[in-house]
Image (cartoon, rainbow, N blue to C red; front, side, top):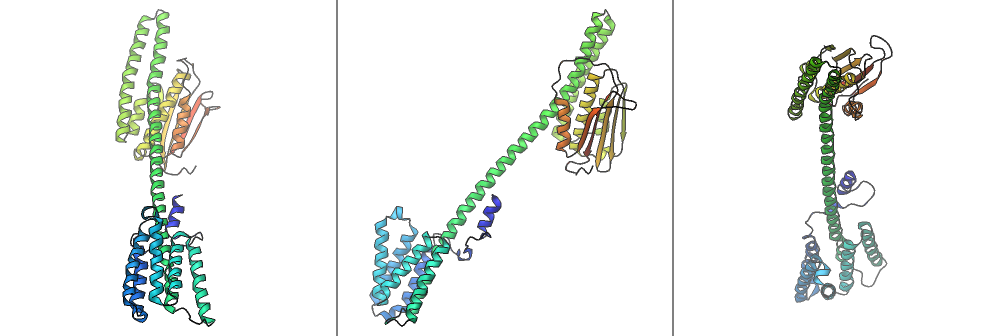
Length: 393
C-alpha cells in the first residue's frame, strides 16, 4: 500500500498522467497564474485595441476571476462565479476586437476543464481547441485568430492541471501518513504481544520448575509419614521448603535477567543441576547472546522438570556446548519411576518448541531407543549463538 502511494506521489510509473513539473506554486497562488498571463497579454496588446479604459476594466476583472477561482463555488456562490466569468468574456471581446469574445470564452472553458477534468482529457480538449483554431487560420478565414489568442488558450489549461496535481499529491500524502500511522500501531501491538508471550513463558517455566519439585517432595513426604517414617518425612518437608526458597530466588533472578538482559550461562546451569545429575559444558558459552542464554536456561529447566517428574531416580545428563555460531544442548534421562504430581498443563514441551522456533533454531524431543539411557527421554535443541543468526543445519 505504501509503495503504491509513493509511486503515485513520485509521478506514477503505472501509466497515469503526471505533470509534477507544473506544481511550481502553492495551491492558493495558482489561480493568480492565470491572471498574470491574461494581464501580461493585455499590457502587450491594449495599445492596439484603442480602448484604454476597457483594458483597465479587463485587468480588474482578471483579479476578480482569480478570486473566484480561489474561493470554492459553494462558498462564493454560483451566481457570482457566472457573473465574473461573463464580465471577463465581455471585456475581452471589447478589448481584443472581433475575436475577443471567442478567445475569452475559450480561455475560460480550457481553464475550467483543467480544474475539473482528468489531466489527459483536459490536455486533449485543449489541443483540439488549439488545433481547430490553427486549422481555421490556415484555411484562410476572413479574420484569422491572432497568434497570441491561440497561445493563451493553450496556456490556460496548465494552472488547472497543476491545481489538480497539487490536490492529488496532498490527498496521497495524507493517505500515506495515515497508512504509516496504522502500520506503526500494528507493529507496536505485535511487539507487545510478542513480549507478553515471552514473559508468560518465563513465568511458566520458573514456576513449573520450582513448584513441580515442591509437589514431588511433598507427595514423597506424605508417603513417608503414612509409613511411619517420621524423620525421613520431616527431612523431605525441609527439602520441599528449600525448593520453595530456591524457587523464589530463581523467580527474582529471572525478573532481573528480563530487566537487565544479561545472564551468566555456565553458573546458572551449574546451579540448576541437582545431586545425581550430570552436567557437561563445552565450547565458548560465555559469548552466547543474552536472549540465547535465557532460552537455553529455560529449555534445560523444563527438560529437568520433565525428567524429575516422569523418571524419578533415573540418571540425567545435561550437555550444553558452543559450536561455532550455535549453542547445542541435550538433556537425556533413563527410565525411572513416574511420580504423579497432578495433571500437567502440557505447555512445557510446547513452550520448548516455541522458544526454539522463535530464535530460528531446531529441536528434537522424543524417547531414547538405545544406548546408556535406552527407554528414557531426550530433549535436544540447536540455537543460534546470537539472536537472528541463521540456522544452517
